Amino acid sequence: MLIPNMNYSHLKDSYLFYNIAQKVKAYLAGHPGEHIYRLGIGDVSLPLCDAVIKGLHRAADDQADPATFNGYMPECGAPFLRTAVADYYRSRGVQVADDEVFISSGASDELGDILDLFDRVNRSLIIEPAYPAYVDANVMGGREIVHLPSSEENGFLPMPDESLAAELIYICSPNNPTGAVFSRDQLRAWVDFANARGAVILFDAAYEAFIEDDSLPHSIFEIEGARTCAVEICSLSKTAGFTGTRLGYTVIPHELTRCGMELNDMWIRNRTTKTNGVSYIIQRAACEVFTPEGQQQIHANIGIYKQNARTVMRALDKLGIWYTGGKNAPYIWLRCPKGMGSWEFFDLLLNEAQIVGTPGEGFGKCGEGYFRFSTFGSPEDTRIAADRLTELLG
Ligand code: PLP
Image (cartoon, rainbow, N blue to C red):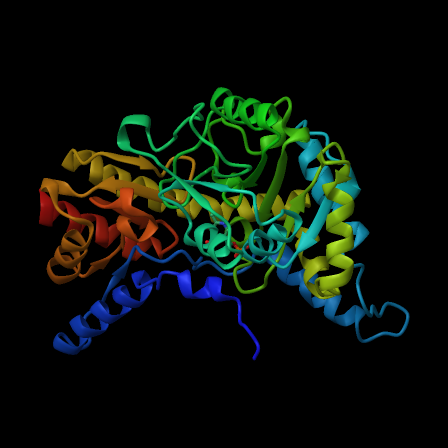
C-alpha cells in the first residue's frame, strides 16, 4: 500500500482566516447590508501601475509575432529580468551577480521549494509571531522546529543566543505580522551567529520596499558576512501589486557552500528539474517595475498604503495603545487594549465598529493579546475605521 507523507497529519489546522470569515458572515447575516471596514487583509487593493500594464500589453503582442514569440523560458529566469533585479541591488550598493538571481513565481512558492536543498535532519528556527507558511512547510518536510518567541520587551526583534540549536534560520524583516524591522547591528549578530555555526539564514524580504528609514537594511546582503550564510527571498506581490500576477526572486550567492556543495549550483539543478520557468509575459512586465518610471509609480502606490498606516497610527497614538510597525512596513501590530484577548478584541471591533482585523494568536502562541492591522485597504475605509476605533475606545 502506498504510504503518504505522514508529516501532513502533524499539521495544525489553520482556523485563523476561516474563523474570521465565519464570524464576519454570521455578523452580516444579523446585520444585512452593513459595511465592513477590512483592516485584516494581506492582499493589495491598488491595481498594477501603468508601466507594468503597458509592459504586459507589449509582451502579449510579442507572443503574436513569429519574430518576437517566446516558447519555454530559461528555468532560472529570463536574462533580461535577472539583470534588472541584480541592477536593483547594485543601485543600492549591494553587489549581486546576475547569475545569483533566480526568478520565481512568488515568495511562498520559493519558501516551500527551497527546503529541497537541505537535509531533513536540519532543525528550523522560526521567530514568532511568524508568517504561518514557515511552520507548515517545515512540518510537511518532517523537520524539527525550534520556536523562538518574541515579545514587546525586545520590540518583537529577538536576538540569537548560545542556547539556540538550529541549522536553518528564518528571518522576515520587515516582519509580517509585527511590522518590526531588524537594524544593521541586529542583523549582523544573526549573520555572525549563522556563520559561526554553519547555519543558513532564509531571509524573507517581501516587504523591503516599505522601509523609509535610511538606516535600516533592505537586504541581508548589506551585512558583511551574509554571502556565506544567507539566501534572500523576495516578491513583487506587495511591492508592486503582483499578488495575482505572480513574480518573485531569490538571491543565492556563489560563496554559500556547505559540505563542498554550492547552493547556487544545487538550485540551478533543482529549477531545471522541477520548473519550466515563469511566463515570458509576466517576466517582461516585471522588468518594468525596475525602470525609473516603474519605481516612481510603485512608490506612489506604496505611498497610499503608508498614508493609511499614518491614519491608523494617529488613532492608536491618540488612544495610547502600544504598537510596533506601520512606519517601515504595511502592518501595524498592537497590544489589545484593556488586557483583552486577541479574539475578544476581534469580536468587539466587529460587533461595535464593524472593523475586521487579524487576531495575533493566529501567528503563534506569543501573539495572544496582540492584533494586526493591515494598511492595504482603501484610504476611505481606513479613515472611517480609524475614526470608529477612536470613538469606540476613546
Ligand atoms: N512572505 C511573507 C512574509 C508574506 O507576508 C507573504 C505574503 O503575504 C509572502 C512571503 C508570500 O508572497 P508571494 O505572494 O510572493 O507568494
